[in-house]
Image (cartoon, rainbow over all chains, first blue to last red; front, top):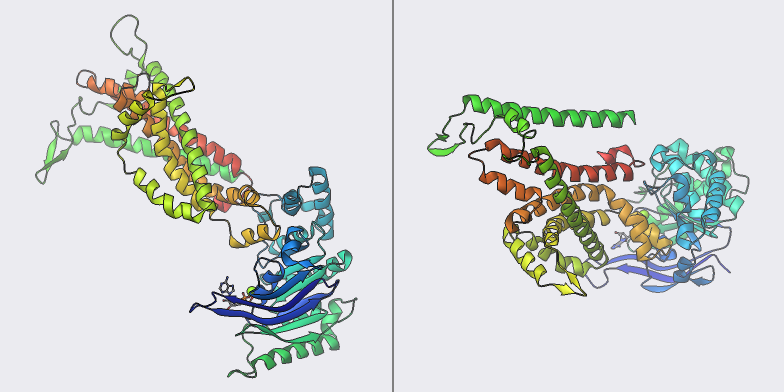
Length: 270
Length: 294
Ligand SMILES: Nc1ncnc2c1ncn2[C@@H]1O[C@H](COP(=O)(O)OP(=O)(O)O)[C@@H](O)[C@H]1O
Ligand SMILES: [Mg+2]
Protein backbone atom coordinates (compact mmCIF):
# COMPACT_ATOMS: atom_id res chain seq x y z
CA UNK A 1 0.00 0.00 0.00
CA UNK A 2 1.42 3.37 -1.04
CA UNK A 3 1.69 6.20 1.43
CA UNK A 4 0.38 8.66 -1.13
CA UNK A 5 -1.28 7.95 -4.43
CA UNK A 6 -2.29 10.79 -6.72
CA UNK A 7 -4.06 9.61 -9.86
CA UNK A 8 -5.03 11.82 -12.80
CA UNK A 9 -5.50 14.86 -10.61
CA UNK A 10 -6.28 18.33 -11.93
CA UNK A 11 -7.03 21.42 -9.93
CA UNK A 12 -8.63 24.39 -11.64
CA UNK A 13 -9.39 27.46 -9.57
CA UNK A 14 -12.31 29.74 -10.48
CA UNK A 15 -13.34 27.45 -13.31
CA UNK A 16 -15.31 29.12 -16.09
CA UNK A 17 -14.53 32.65 -14.92
CA UNK A 18 -12.01 35.10 -16.42
CA UNK A 19 -9.84 34.45 -13.36
CA UNK A 20 -9.53 30.73 -14.13
CA UNK A 21 -6.15 29.24 -13.13
CA UNK A 22 -5.10 25.77 -14.21
CA UNK A 23 -3.05 25.14 -11.09
CA UNK A 24 -2.48 21.44 -11.80
CA UNK A 25 -3.19 19.34 -14.86
CA UNK A 26 -3.14 15.53 -15.00
CA UNK A 27 -0.78 14.89 -12.10
CA UNK A 28 0.20 11.33 -11.22
CA UNK A 29 2.44 10.61 -8.25
CA UNK A 30 3.02 7.66 -5.98
CA UNK A 31 5.02 7.89 -2.74
CA UNK A 32 6.02 4.66 -1.01
CA UNK A 33 6.16 4.33 2.79
CA UNK A 34 9.45 5.60 4.22
CA UNK A 35 10.25 7.60 1.11
CA UNK A 36 11.34 11.23 1.15
CA UNK A 37 9.98 13.03 -1.92
CA UNK A 38 10.57 16.70 -2.72
CA UNK A 39 8.48 18.89 -4.99
CA UNK A 40 10.49 21.59 -6.75
CA UNK A 41 9.71 24.14 -9.42
CA UNK A 42 9.32 27.85 -10.01
CA UNK A 43 6.77 29.92 -8.12
CA UNK A 44 3.18 29.27 -9.09
CA UNK A 45 3.76 25.81 -10.56
CA UNK A 46 1.32 24.30 -8.09
CA UNK A 47 3.59 22.77 -5.43
CA UNK A 48 1.53 24.08 -2.52
CA UNK A 49 -1.67 23.16 -4.32
CA UNK A 50 -0.51 19.56 -4.75
CA UNK A 51 0.45 19.37 -1.07
CA UNK A 52 -2.94 20.80 -0.03
CA UNK A 53 -4.70 18.24 -2.22
CA UNK A 54 -2.82 15.44 -0.46
CA UNK A 55 -3.76 17.04 2.87
CA UNK A 56 -7.40 17.28 1.77
CA UNK A 57 -7.37 21.00 2.46
CA UNK A 58 -8.46 21.28 -1.19
CA UNK A 59 -10.64 18.98 -3.31
CA UNK A 60 -9.30 17.99 -6.75
CA UNK A 61 -11.30 19.15 -9.77
CA UNK A 62 -10.75 15.75 -11.37
CA UNK A 63 -8.90 12.62 -10.31
CA UNK A 64 -8.44 10.98 -6.92
CA UNK A 65 -6.02 11.24 -3.98
CA UNK A 66 -5.44 8.29 -1.67
CA UNK A 67 -3.39 8.45 1.54
CA UNK A 68 -2.51 5.23 3.34
CA UNK A 69 -5.02 3.38 1.20
CA UNK A 70 -7.87 5.65 2.33
CA UNK A 71 -9.46 8.65 0.70
CA UNK A 72 -7.65 11.88 1.50
CA UNK A 73 -10.73 13.07 3.41
CA UNK A 74 -10.72 10.01 5.66
CA UNK A 75 -6.97 10.33 6.30
CA UNK A 76 -7.44 13.90 7.42
CA UNK A 77 -10.18 12.88 9.83
CA UNK A 78 -7.90 10.13 11.16
CA UNK A 79 -4.97 12.57 11.48
CA UNK A 80 -2.86 10.30 9.30
CA UNK A 81 -0.51 13.13 8.48
CA UNK A 82 1.15 16.08 10.19
CA UNK A 83 1.81 19.38 8.47
CA UNK A 84 4.45 22.11 8.73
CA UNK A 85 4.57 25.42 6.89
CA UNK A 86 7.15 28.11 6.15
CA UNK A 87 5.98 30.04 9.20
CA UNK A 88 6.22 27.85 12.29
CA UNK A 89 2.75 29.13 13.18
CA UNK A 90 3.00 28.32 16.89
CA UNK A 91 0.23 29.75 19.04
CA UNK A 92 1.60 32.73 21.00
CA UNK A 93 -0.63 32.07 23.98
CA UNK A 94 0.48 28.47 24.50
CA UNK A 95 3.71 27.28 26.02
CA UNK A 96 6.02 25.19 23.86
CA UNK A 97 4.72 21.95 25.38
CA UNK A 98 1.09 23.02 25.03
CA UNK A 99 1.72 23.82 21.37
CA UNK A 100 3.02 20.32 20.79
CA UNK A 101 0.00 18.92 22.63
CA UNK A 102 -2.49 20.76 20.40
CA UNK A 103 -3.21 17.89 17.96
CA UNK A 104 -3.47 15.45 20.88
CA UNK A 105 -5.90 17.73 22.69
CA UNK A 106 -8.07 17.88 19.58
CA UNK A 107 -8.03 14.08 19.50
CA UNK A 108 -9.22 13.98 23.10
CA UNK A 109 -6.13 12.49 24.76
CA UNK A 110 -6.00 12.83 28.53
CA UNK A 111 -3.62 15.17 30.27
CA UNK A 112 -0.88 12.81 31.48
CA UNK A 113 -0.63 11.05 28.15
CA UNK A 114 -0.36 14.39 26.37
CA UNK A 115 2.35 15.67 28.67
CA UNK A 116 4.36 12.48 28.32
CA UNK A 117 4.14 12.60 24.53
CA UNK A 118 5.09 16.29 24.44
CA UNK A 119 8.20 15.53 26.46
CA UNK A 120 9.04 12.63 24.14
CA UNK A 121 8.70 14.94 21.12
CA UNK A 122 10.83 17.64 22.77
CA UNK A 123 13.55 15.06 23.23
CA UNK A 124 13.19 13.98 19.62
CA UNK A 125 13.85 17.53 18.42
CA UNK A 126 16.58 17.97 21.06
CA UNK A 127 14.90 20.77 23.02
CA UNK A 128 13.93 18.83 26.15
CA UNK A 129 14.32 21.70 28.60
CA UNK A 130 12.15 24.15 26.63
CA UNK A 131 8.72 22.79 27.58
CA UNK A 132 7.59 25.74 29.68
CA UNK A 133 8.96 28.57 27.55
CA UNK A 134 6.69 30.64 25.36
CA UNK A 135 7.20 30.41 21.57
CA UNK A 136 8.33 34.02 21.19
CA UNK A 137 11.23 33.29 23.50
CA UNK A 138 12.72 30.88 20.92
CA UNK A 139 14.80 31.54 17.80
CA UNK A 140 13.30 30.91 14.35
CA UNK A 141 15.07 27.57 13.97
CA UNK A 142 13.91 26.38 17.40
CA UNK A 143 10.34 27.44 16.61
CA UNK A 144 10.47 25.43 13.41
CA UNK A 145 11.72 22.39 15.35
CA UNK A 146 8.76 22.77 17.72
CA UNK A 147 6.45 22.97 14.70
CA UNK A 148 7.91 19.67 13.46
CA UNK A 149 7.44 18.17 16.93
CA UNK A 150 3.81 19.32 16.84
CA UNK A 151 3.31 17.83 13.37
CA UNK A 152 4.69 14.48 14.54
CA UNK A 153 3.11 14.47 18.01
CA UNK A 154 0.33 12.07 17.10
CA UNK A 155 2.91 9.79 15.39
CA UNK A 156 1.37 10.17 11.94
CA UNK A 157 2.95 7.97 9.25
CA UNK A 158 3.14 10.92 6.84
CA UNK A 159 4.65 14.41 7.14
CA UNK A 160 3.69 17.15 4.67
CA UNK A 161 5.99 20.20 4.61
CA UNK A 162 5.63 23.41 2.61
CA UNK A 163 8.98 25.23 2.42
CA UNK A 164 9.49 24.72 6.16
CA UNK A 165 13.05 26.08 6.15
CA UNK A 166 12.43 28.88 3.66
CA UNK A 167 12.56 31.60 6.32
CA UNK A 168 15.74 30.37 8.03
CA UNK A 169 19.31 31.53 7.47
CA UNK A 170 21.60 29.23 5.50
CA UNK A 171 23.50 27.80 8.50
CA UNK A 172 20.36 27.01 10.47
CA UNK A 173 18.81 25.63 7.34
CA UNK A 174 21.55 23.07 6.76
CA UNK A 175 21.44 22.06 10.43
CA UNK A 176 17.66 21.64 10.22
CA UNK A 177 17.99 19.47 7.11
CA UNK A 178 20.26 17.10 9.01
CA UNK A 179 17.89 17.07 11.97
CA UNK A 180 14.88 16.39 9.76
CA UNK A 181 16.63 13.39 8.19
CA UNK A 182 17.54 12.01 11.60
CA UNK A 183 14.01 12.50 12.96
CA UNK A 184 12.38 10.88 9.95
CA UNK A 185 14.75 7.95 10.09
CA UNK A 186 14.06 7.47 13.81
CA UNK A 187 10.29 7.69 13.40
CA UNK A 188 10.15 6.01 9.96
CA UNK A 189 8.01 8.85 8.67
CA UNK A 190 7.22 9.32 4.98
CA UNK A 191 7.78 12.90 3.84
CA UNK A 192 6.46 15.04 1.00
CA UNK A 193 8.54 18.21 1.04
CA UNK A 194 8.02 21.40 -0.98
CA UNK A 195 11.12 23.51 -1.56
CA UNK A 196 12.61 26.25 -3.71
CA UNK A 197 16.15 25.12 -3.18
CA UNK A 198 17.86 22.61 -5.46
CA UNK A 199 20.61 21.58 -2.96
CA UNK A 200 18.00 21.15 -0.24
CA UNK A 201 15.88 18.89 -2.44
CA UNK A 202 18.90 16.83 -3.51
CA UNK A 203 20.33 16.50 0.00
CA UNK A 204 17.07 15.37 1.58
CA UNK A 205 15.27 13.30 -1.03
CA UNK A 206 15.04 9.86 -2.50
CA UNK A 207 13.24 11.40 -5.43
CA UNK A 208 12.87 14.98 -6.63
CA UNK A 209 9.65 15.76 -8.48
CA UNK A 210 10.26 18.59 -10.94
CA UNK A 211 7.25 20.72 -11.82
CA UNK A 212 6.56 23.51 -14.29
CA UNK A 213 3.89 26.21 -14.43
CA UNK A 214 1.05 27.30 -16.75
CA UNK A 215 -0.48 24.83 -16.51
CA UNK A 216 1.06 23.28 -13.38
CA UNK A 217 2.32 19.77 -14.09
CA UNK A 218 5.02 17.25 -13.28
CA UNK A 219 7.70 17.26 -15.98
CA UNK A 220 10.28 14.91 -14.57
CA UNK A 221 11.12 12.81 -11.55
CA UNK A 222 14.85 12.65 -10.67
CA UNK A 223 16.20 9.81 -8.53
CA UNK A 224 18.89 11.23 -6.27
CA UNK A 225 19.24 8.90 -3.29
CA UNK A 226 22.49 9.80 -1.55
CA UNK A 227 22.21 6.84 0.81
CA UNK A 228 21.21 6.48 4.43
CA UNK A 229 24.40 7.84 5.96
CA UNK A 230 24.29 11.40 4.77
CA UNK A 231 26.41 13.84 6.71
CA UNK A 232 27.88 17.30 6.26
CA UNK A 233 30.58 15.65 4.10
CA UNK A 234 27.89 14.57 1.68
CA UNK A 235 27.51 18.23 0.70
CA UNK A 236 31.00 18.07 -0.80
CA UNK A 237 30.57 14.68 -2.45
CA UNK A 238 30.50 14.10 -6.20
CA UNK A 239 27.11 12.39 -6.28
CA UNK A 240 25.63 15.42 -4.44
CA UNK A 241 26.82 17.69 -7.24
CA UNK A 242 25.73 15.32 -9.97
CA UNK A 243 22.30 15.23 -8.32
CA UNK A 244 22.17 19.03 -8.32
CA UNK A 245 23.13 19.09 -11.98
CA UNK A 246 20.48 16.55 -12.87
CA UNK A 247 17.72 18.49 -11.09
CA UNK A 248 18.92 21.78 -12.56
CA UNK A 249 18.83 20.32 -16.06
CA UNK A 250 15.37 18.94 -15.47
CA UNK A 251 14.25 22.41 -14.37
CA UNK A 252 15.87 24.00 -17.43
CA UNK A 253 14.14 21.49 -19.63
CA UNK A 254 10.82 22.70 -18.30
CA UNK A 255 11.74 26.15 -19.50
CA UNK A 256 13.19 25.19 -22.87
CA UNK A 257 9.92 25.98 -24.59
CA UNK A 258 9.80 29.43 -22.99
CA UNK A 259 11.53 32.54 -24.28
CA UNK A 260 13.93 32.90 -21.39
CA UNK A 261 15.46 29.45 -21.39
CA UNK A 262 18.32 29.12 -18.92
CA UNK A 263 16.98 31.49 -16.30
CA UNK A 264 14.94 29.44 -13.90
CA UNK A 265 12.97 32.05 -12.09
CA UNK A 266 11.94 31.45 -8.54
CA UNK A 267 14.32 28.57 -7.92
CA UNK A 268 17.32 29.13 -5.75
CA UNK A 269 20.53 27.82 -7.18
CA UNK A 270 22.52 27.75 -4.00
CA UNK B 1 8.49 42.58 34.62
CA UNK B 2 10.50 45.56 35.77
CA UNK B 3 9.90 47.22 32.44
CA UNK B 4 6.16 46.66 32.74
CA UNK B 5 6.15 48.21 36.22
CA UNK B 6 8.05 51.21 34.91
CA UNK B 7 5.57 51.62 32.09
CA UNK B 8 2.63 51.40 34.48
CA UNK B 9 4.24 54.01 36.75
CA UNK B 10 4.88 56.24 33.74
CA UNK B 11 1.27 55.98 32.62
CA UNK B 12 -0.09 56.72 36.08
CA UNK B 13 2.28 59.69 36.28
CA UNK B 14 1.10 61.05 32.95
CA UNK B 15 -2.50 60.62 34.04
CA UNK B 16 -1.89 62.61 37.24
CA UNK B 17 0.01 65.29 35.33
CA UNK B 18 -2.84 65.69 32.86
CA UNK B 19 -5.34 66.05 35.71
CA UNK B 20 -3.14 68.63 37.39
CA UNK B 21 -2.90 70.48 34.09
CA UNK B 22 -6.69 70.68 33.75
CA UNK B 23 -6.91 71.90 37.36
CA UNK B 24 -4.35 74.63 36.72
CA UNK B 25 -6.13 75.73 33.53
CA UNK B 26 -9.42 75.85 35.42
CA UNK B 27 -8.04 78.11 38.13
CA UNK B 28 -6.10 80.19 35.58
CA UNK B 29 -9.28 80.85 33.61
CA UNK B 30 -10.98 81.96 36.81
CA UNK B 31 -8.28 84.60 37.18
CA UNK B 32 -8.20 85.94 33.61
CA UNK B 33 -11.66 84.96 32.25
CA UNK B 34 -14.60 87.44 32.15
CA UNK B 35 -16.86 87.31 35.21
CA UNK B 36 -20.06 87.47 33.18
CA UNK B 37 -18.95 85.40 30.20
CA UNK B 38 -17.73 86.92 26.98
CA UNK B 39 -18.09 87.08 23.26
CA UNK B 40 -15.42 86.06 20.84
CA UNK B 41 -15.94 87.44 17.32
CA UNK B 42 -19.51 88.21 18.28
CA UNK B 43 -20.33 84.70 19.49
CA UNK B 44 -20.95 84.01 23.17
CA UNK B 45 -18.49 81.20 23.79
CA UNK B 46 -16.40 82.32 26.72
CA UNK B 47 -17.95 80.77 29.86
CA UNK B 48 -18.56 82.84 32.97
CA UNK B 49 -15.72 82.62 35.40
CA UNK B 50 -17.68 83.64 38.49
CA UNK B 51 -17.90 81.33 41.48
CA UNK B 52 -21.42 80.14 40.62
CA UNK B 53 -20.53 78.82 37.19
CA UNK B 54 -16.97 77.79 38.02
CA UNK B 55 -16.42 77.21 41.71
CA UNK B 56 -12.86 76.93 42.99
CA UNK B 57 -11.41 73.45 43.03
CA UNK B 58 -10.74 73.55 46.73
CA UNK B 59 -14.41 74.37 47.30
CA UNK B 60 -15.41 71.27 45.37
CA UNK B 61 -12.99 69.14 47.35
CA UNK B 62 -13.89 70.55 50.74
CA UNK B 63 -17.57 70.06 49.86
CA UNK B 64 -17.00 66.32 50.14
CA UNK B 65 -16.38 66.64 53.86
CA UNK B 66 -19.48 68.71 54.53
CA UNK B 67 -22.97 67.35 55.15
CA UNK B 68 -25.24 66.90 52.14
CA UNK B 69 -28.00 69.13 53.48
CA UNK B 70 -28.54 71.46 56.39
CA UNK B 71 -30.10 69.58 59.24
CA UNK B 72 -29.04 67.32 62.10
CA UNK B 73 -29.16 63.89 60.41
CA UNK B 74 -27.53 64.64 57.09
CA UNK B 75 -24.70 62.40 55.95
CA UNK B 76 -21.47 63.84 54.62
CA UNK B 77 -21.35 64.24 50.85
CA UNK B 78 -18.45 61.88 50.23
CA UNK B 79 -20.51 59.06 51.71
CA UNK B 80 -23.60 59.97 49.70
CA UNK B 81 -21.61 60.16 46.47
CA UNK B 82 -19.81 56.92 47.23
CA UNK B 83 -23.06 55.08 47.92
CA UNK B 84 -24.61 56.52 44.76
CA UNK B 85 -21.57 55.49 42.73
CA UNK B 86 -21.67 51.98 44.20
CA UNK B 87 -25.36 51.66 43.32
CA UNK B 88 -24.73 52.79 39.74
CA UNK B 89 -21.61 50.63 39.52
CA UNK B 90 -23.62 47.51 40.22
CA UNK B 91 -26.19 48.46 37.58
CA UNK B 92 -23.43 49.21 35.09
CA UNK B 93 -21.75 45.90 35.88
CA UNK B 94 -25.00 44.01 35.19
CA UNK B 95 -25.37 46.00 31.96
CA UNK B 96 -21.76 45.31 31.03
CA UNK B 97 -22.16 41.57 31.59
CA UNK B 98 -25.38 41.45 29.54
CA UNK B 99 -23.91 43.65 26.83
CA UNK B 100 -20.66 41.74 26.52
CA UNK B 101 -22.42 38.35 26.43
CA UNK B 102 -24.66 39.57 23.63
CA UNK B 103 -21.77 41.28 21.85
CA UNK B 104 -19.51 38.22 21.98
CA UNK B 105 -22.33 35.88 20.94
CA UNK B 106 -23.19 38.12 17.99
CA UNK B 107 -19.54 38.27 16.95
CA UNK B 108 -19.24 34.47 17.08
CA UNK B 109 -22.43 34.10 15.02
CA UNK B 110 -21.23 36.62 12.46
CA UNK B 111 -17.92 34.76 12.18
CA UNK B 112 -19.72 31.46 11.69
CA UNK B 113 -22.24 32.66 9.13
CA UNK B 114 -21.12 35.18 6.53
CA UNK B 115 -24.76 35.96 5.72
CA UNK B 116 -25.32 36.92 9.37
CA UNK B 117 -22.55 39.47 9.13
CA UNK B 118 -23.92 40.99 5.94
CA UNK B 119 -27.49 40.98 7.22
CA UNK B 120 -26.93 41.97 10.83
CA UNK B 121 -24.06 44.43 10.94
CA UNK B 122 -25.93 47.33 9.26
CA UNK B 123 -28.74 47.03 11.83
CA UNK B 124 -26.24 47.02 14.67
CA UNK B 125 -24.72 50.23 13.31
CA UNK B 126 -28.16 51.84 12.96
CA UNK B 127 -29.12 50.75 16.48
CA UNK B 128 -26.37 52.95 17.89
CA UNK B 129 -27.81 56.08 16.26
CA UNK B 130 -31.04 55.82 18.30
CA UNK B 131 -30.80 58.53 20.98
CA UNK B 132 -30.52 57.00 24.41
CA UNK B 133 -32.72 59.67 25.97
CA UNK B 134 -35.57 58.62 23.68
CA UNK B 135 -35.01 54.95 24.33
CA UNK B 136 -34.90 55.11 28.12
CA UNK B 137 -38.62 55.76 28.84
CA UNK B 138 -39.54 53.15 26.23
CA UNK B 139 -37.49 50.45 27.91
CA UNK B 140 -38.98 51.36 31.28
CA UNK B 141 -42.53 51.07 29.99
CA UNK B 142 -41.84 47.82 28.11
CA UNK B 143 -40.16 46.40 31.17
CA UNK B 144 -43.10 47.43 33.34
CA UNK B 145 -45.44 45.38 31.14
CA UNK B 146 -43.25 42.31 31.36
CA UNK B 147 -44.45 39.52 33.65
CA UNK B 148 -43.08 36.11 32.74
CA UNK B 149 -43.23 33.15 35.14
CA UNK B 150 -43.73 35.41 38.12
CA UNK B 151 -40.75 37.52 37.17
CA UNK B 152 -41.49 41.21 37.52
CA UNK B 153 -39.17 43.67 35.89
CA UNK B 154 -37.42 45.77 38.55
CA UNK B 155 -37.01 49.43 37.63
CA UNK B 156 -33.25 49.33 37.94
CA UNK B 157 -33.05 46.62 35.29
CA UNK B 158 -34.13 49.16 32.67
CA UNK B 159 -31.05 51.22 33.47
CA UNK B 160 -28.85 48.12 33.15
CA UNK B 161 -30.45 47.26 29.81
CA UNK B 162 -29.60 50.72 28.51
CA UNK B 163 -26.06 50.24 29.76
CA UNK B 164 -25.97 46.93 27.89
CA UNK B 165 -27.32 48.68 24.80
CA UNK B 166 -24.33 51.01 24.71
CA UNK B 167 -21.86 48.28 25.73
CA UNK B 168 -22.68 45.51 23.25
CA UNK B 169 -21.88 47.40 20.05
CA UNK B 170 -18.16 48.15 20.44
CA UNK B 171 -17.74 44.69 21.97
CA UNK B 172 -19.46 42.96 19.05
CA UNK B 173 -17.46 44.88 16.46
CA UNK B 174 -14.09 44.49 18.23
CA UNK B 175 -14.63 40.81 18.95
CA UNK B 176 -15.67 40.19 15.35
CA UNK B 177 -12.48 41.81 14.10
CA UNK B 178 -10.50 39.77 16.60
CA UNK B 179 -12.13 36.46 15.70
CA UNK B 180 -11.33 37.15 12.07
CA UNK B 181 -7.72 38.05 12.86
CA UNK B 182 -6.64 34.40 13.22
CA UNK B 183 -4.01 33.85 10.49
CA UNK B 184 -5.05 31.77 7.47
CA UNK B 185 -2.13 29.40 8.11
CA UNK B 186 -3.34 28.70 11.67
CA UNK B 187 -6.88 28.09 10.44
CA UNK B 188 -5.47 25.71 7.84
CA UNK B 189 -3.49 23.95 10.57
CA UNK B 190 -6.68 23.41 12.59
CA UNK B 191 -8.35 22.11 9.41
CA UNK B 192 -5.49 19.70 8.87
CA UNK B 193 -6.23 18.29 12.34
CA UNK B 194 -9.89 17.96 11.32
CA UNK B 195 -10.77 20.26 14.24
CA UNK B 196 -14.47 21.08 14.62
CA UNK B 197 -15.67 24.65 14.24
CA UNK B 198 -16.17 24.87 17.99
CA UNK B 199 -12.64 23.61 18.71
CA UNK B 200 -11.24 26.16 16.27
CA UNK B 201 -13.33 28.89 17.90
CA UNK B 202 -12.13 28.22 21.43
CA UNK B 203 -8.58 27.03 20.79
CA UNK B 204 -7.64 29.47 18.04
CA UNK B 205 -10.07 32.27 17.24
CA UNK B 206 -10.83 33.51 20.76
CA UNK B 207 -7.24 33.45 22.03
CA UNK B 208 -6.19 35.27 18.86
CA UNK B 209 -8.99 37.79 19.41
CA UNK B 210 -7.99 38.88 22.92
CA UNK B 211 -5.73 41.77 21.86
CA UNK B 212 -8.71 43.13 19.87
CA UNK B 213 -11.25 42.37 22.57
CA UNK B 214 -9.55 44.25 25.39
CA UNK B 215 -9.86 47.77 23.93
CA UNK B 216 -13.39 46.89 22.75
CA UNK B 217 -14.33 45.81 26.27
CA UNK B 218 -12.88 49.05 27.65
CA UNK B 219 -15.15 51.03 25.34
CA UNK B 220 -18.03 48.75 26.32
CA UNK B 221 -17.31 49.29 30.01
CA UNK B 222 -17.47 53.06 29.76
CA UNK B 223 -20.51 52.70 27.50
CA UNK B 224 -22.32 50.74 30.18
CA UNK B 225 -21.58 53.48 32.74
CA UNK B 226 -22.83 56.21 30.41
CA UNK B 227 -25.93 54.18 29.59
CA UNK B 228 -26.77 53.64 33.25
CA UNK B 229 -26.15 57.24 34.30
CA UNK B 230 -28.17 58.66 31.40
CA UNK B 231 -30.95 56.17 32.10
CA UNK B 232 -31.00 57.18 35.77
CA UNK B 233 -31.26 60.83 34.78
CA UNK B 234 -33.94 60.40 32.13
CA UNK B 235 -36.11 57.93 34.05
CA UNK B 236 -35.56 59.51 37.45
CA UNK B 237 -34.35 56.27 39.02
CA UNK B 238 -33.40 56.90 42.66
CA UNK B 239 -30.28 55.76 44.43
CA UNK B 240 -27.59 56.21 41.78
CA UNK B 241 -25.04 58.81 40.78
CA UNK B 242 -27.23 59.98 37.85
CA UNK B 243 -29.98 61.01 40.23
CA UNK B 244 -27.46 62.85 42.42
CA UNK B 245 -26.23 64.80 39.40
CA UNK B 246 -29.68 66.18 38.55
CA UNK B 247 -30.59 66.81 42.17
CA UNK B 248 -27.39 68.70 42.84
CA UNK B 249 -27.55 70.53 39.52
CA UNK B 250 -30.88 72.01 40.59
CA UNK B 251 -29.20 73.41 43.67
CA UNK B 252 -26.30 74.87 41.69
CA UNK B 253 -27.20 78.51 42.22
CA UNK B 254 -27.05 78.24 46.00
CA UNK B 255 -24.42 75.50 46.27
CA UNK B 256 -22.35 75.51 43.05
CA UNK B 257 -19.62 73.14 44.24
CA UNK B 258 -22.07 70.38 45.10
CA UNK B 259 -22.85 69.14 41.58
CA UNK B 260 -19.17 68.69 40.85
CA UNK B 261 -18.81 66.18 43.66
CA UNK B 262 -21.32 63.97 41.87
CA UNK B 263 -19.78 64.57 38.43
CA UNK B 264 -16.39 63.45 39.74
CA UNK B 265 -18.12 60.46 41.25
CA UNK B 266 -19.44 59.49 37.81
CA UNK B 267 -15.98 59.92 36.28
CA UNK B 268 -14.50 57.72 38.99
CA UNK B 269 -17.13 55.13 38.18
CA UNK B 270 -16.04 55.01 34.55
CA UNK B 271 -12.42 54.70 35.62
CA UNK B 272 -13.27 51.84 37.99
CA UNK B 273 -14.99 49.91 35.20
CA UNK B 274 -12.10 50.48 32.78
CA UNK B 275 -9.71 49.44 35.56
CA UNK B 276 -11.54 46.16 35.90
CA UNK B 277 -11.00 45.43 32.20
CA UNK B 278 -7.34 46.44 32.45
CA UNK B 279 -6.91 43.96 35.28
CA UNK B 280 -8.39 41.20 33.13
CA UNK B 281 -6.10 42.30 30.30
CA UNK B 282 -2.98 42.02 32.44
CA UNK B 283 -4.00 38.55 33.61
CA UNK B 284 -4.89 37.24 30.14
CA UNK B 285 -1.92 38.74 28.35
CA UNK B 286 0.80 38.01 30.88
CA UNK B 287 2.37 35.31 28.71
CA UNK B 288 2.05 37.02 25.35
CA UNK B 289 4.90 38.62 23.41
CA UNK B 290 5.40 42.08 24.85
CA UNK B 291 4.93 43.99 21.55
CA UNK B 292 1.23 43.19 21.44
CA UNK B 293 0.51 44.21 25.03
CA UNK B 294 0.91 47.94 24.42
N1 LIG C 1 -7.19 29.53 -3.58
C1 LIG C 1 -6.75 29.88 -4.81
N2 LIG C 1 -7.56 30.54 -5.66
C2 LIG C 1 -7.14 30.88 -6.89
N3 LIG C 1 -5.93 30.61 -7.38
C3 LIG C 1 -5.07 29.96 -6.59
C4 LIG C 1 -5.43 29.56 -5.26
N4 LIG C 1 -4.37 28.91 -4.70
C5 LIG C 1 -3.41 28.92 -5.64
N5 LIG C 1 -3.81 29.54 -6.78
C6 LIG C 1 -3.03 29.69 -8.02
O1 LIG C 1 -2.59 28.43 -8.41
C7 LIG C 1 -1.27 28.49 -8.92
C8 LIG C 1 -0.38 27.55 -8.14
O2 LIG C 1 -0.21 28.06 -6.83
P1 LIG C 1 0.68 27.36 -5.72
O3 LIG C 1 0.28 25.95 -5.63
O4 LIG C 1 0.61 28.18 -4.49
O5 LIG C 1 2.14 27.47 -6.36
P2 LIG C 1 3.56 27.24 -5.68
O6 LIG C 1 3.36 26.74 -4.30
O7 LIG C 1 4.25 26.26 -6.57
O8 LIG C 1 4.27 28.56 -5.71
C9 LIG C 1 -0.84 29.94 -8.82
O9 LIG C 1 -1.03 30.54 -10.09
C10 LIG C 1 -1.78 30.52 -7.82
O10 LIG C 1 -2.02 31.87 -8.08
MG1 LIG D 1 3.86 27.62 -2.37
